[in-house]
Amino acid sequence: MSRLKMVAGNWKMNKTLQEGVALAAQLKEDVKNPSCAVVIGTPFIHLATVAELLKDSPIKVAAENCADKEKGAFTGEVSAEMVRSTGATYCILGHSERRAYYHEDYEILKNKVELALANGLDVIFCIGEVKEERESGKQNEVVQAQLDGSVFHLSAGQWKHITLAYEPVWAIGTGLTATPSQAQDMHAFIRSLVADKYGAEAAEATTILYGGSCNEKNAAELFACPDIDGGLIGGAALVAEKFEAIIAAR
Ligand code: 13P
Image 1 (tube, rainbow, N blue to C red):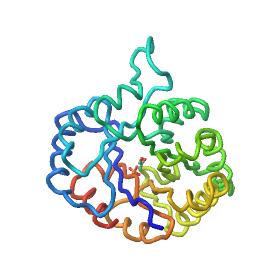
Image 2 (image 1 turned 180 degrees about the vertical axis):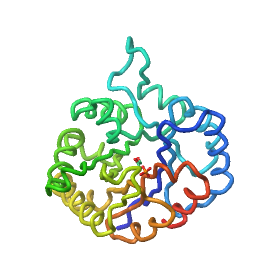
Image 3 (image 1 turned 120 degrees about the horizontal axis):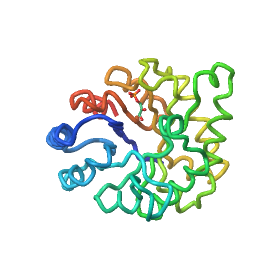
Image 4 (image 1 turned 120 degrees about the vertical axis):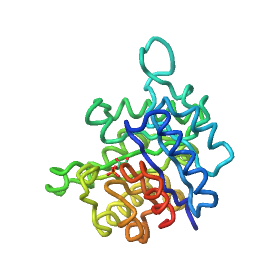
């Protein structure tokens, strides 16, 4: 059975509206027939304009976050419903930067995931261990706890809208990519957990991305691993040529 392959970008807090629209326009021009799903995660303020620009393109648009509350008096927050109303169809949740800097715990992320799904968004859910956890051999239990804490309560129907992204925190923005064998081992472990929870068929169908210093030079080698279905790309997604080369490698 073949599962969806994907290259997704996460722009993080980069690009003014004008710069972001210019990048999206370039990608629209260049990426007309990708051999995998392509998603770009942009800051909230770009979503409506970029989604409109890309509406006749195969490129899908993701928010990088959404609120853990449905609506109301939560100054500065953006709800899943508001995200969906922009035309975006994905939401990245559980990113290690949100967990570390904005204290998003399992429970908060669980609420966010549920609200995103309830509002028709597909979720790219990020998991991954920090350096000390890898050094002490705890990476598997950390990742398992992240899944147990925020997404493994979902129904089989909801699970179809989840893409996982394994992002070892020590590899993010550091130039220190996980080796293909480290990444493959973890992806295979994650897939086995999904199989335990949702069955072998659902596990085979689950897209698991790798993220963390994935770039145009190392993408092909990572994507050649049997359980690595694509990438979630930070820095290299900010430059059209680099992001396009990664898409071509998938
Ligand atoms: P880098 O590709 O910049 O390491 O970032 C990865 C990431 O955090 C994607 O979500």
